[in-house]
Image (cartoon, rainbow, N blue to C red; front, side):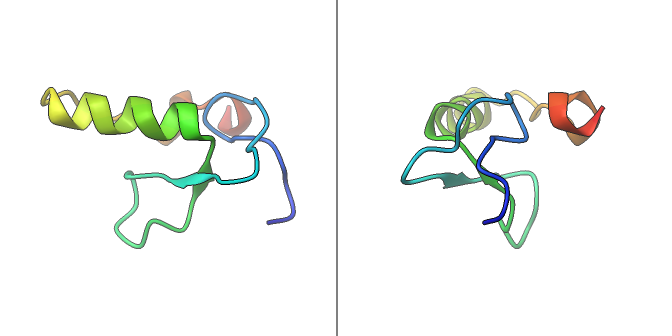
Length: 58
């Protein structure tokens, strides 16, 4: 993992990053906080935050 920042929030990835649910292969690493938020959104039937709205992709 060359970049140690979370592409979803810009914060540090931490020692045990999660894998984003936005991709089927789940190869995009995000911080655990964002991973938890994605899981909660999915459990509540909400759409995920699109890549285009992630701070490091704008």
